[in-house]
Length: 153
Image (cartoon, rainbow, N blue to C red):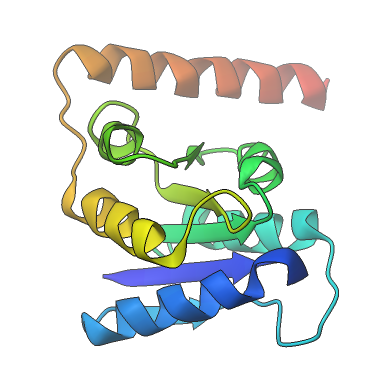
């Protein structure tokens, strides 16, 4: 599995710890920034990471900012991407199993390092369950396609 990861300056410390955690599991990681001491606008990082997932360069991704919310909102603007903020085990699991989220978002100011690692593991181990969720995820994609056509007019 190949994972993209990115953060803003508010979450650099957590991103570094998550990269170490993924490396320890033998997972290939590409860091989209921010780098130490670098101030970036989180939408720039979120879009770069989300595009890399949407175009198939990476299967999944992790985005981290102060709360995770801004990253998720921005990543979800990229067609074909489903990003979810997760701060508890159940949401981390359901983000994958029910919503087929390819991107998990964390808030460094909201959760600690150990919880983030645990949630990342749960999310990585979870797969889309299909079943009753399939039609819902397909409907999300349908709405997204319709909105993109409307915008293109």
